[in-house]
Image 1 (cartoon, rainbow, N blue to C red):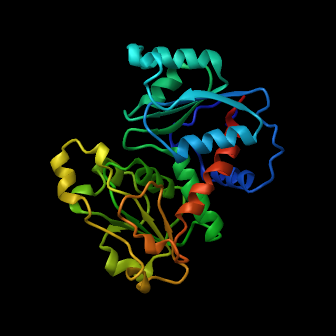
Image 2: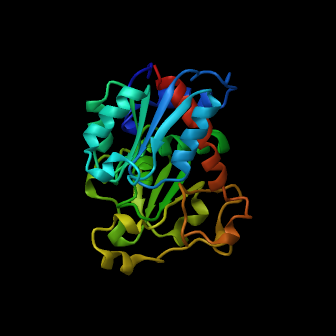
Length: 296
């Protein structure tokens, strides 16, 4: 289906065919002037490195321009301007609005207010659709397909929106098995588990590592814990290092949405399993493909 002028709020706005069309576009050569004369508004109410910079790079490589902010300091929001009024103003200036926010539903509200299409660059603890696109694209390219693979998803599966979006996205495919690996207090919420249509089970990493084709790791997200004491109880509770990976398949790949803290040791970077920096680099062509498809 065409996404011209449409909002992108959840990975489930896309079908499998939609995603794979996007993957093919991302793998192709761009002309470089697809966004000539267009303006992309980057409304980042929450800190970001890779998401914001890759959207900026994608816009520039397509010949477009961008406006926006990555902190409320220096904007009228610091004076008390509401989220709604900020979105209405950006809508008057730009052809598409990319929104990142800590609150669940912020992108949906922006989409209700704006005439321009809105792309959710991550809000709350559930949705980060463009990250899920990058994650699937990495598997699609590096493993030559997404189906019939054994996945391990390790980390903060309760508050992490990247892992949540990745699991929802796998619903569109046919993985052989998905192992959910997390401290008990960081297991996914029931509302997510109830949506999973894929074969999954809880496990621990040491037991299933030799089976895995893809290991998706996330950090423990301190900033999303409602109770700091809960974070203190689980921090540092898992760590991947090169010694541990001796039991992994030679071609197993490790993904991570980044940033990492201490959950992947530096000695993993030089192993053939480490795909997370390449995964981050794929953020540019995927976001170029998405902008090309969405901007009217």
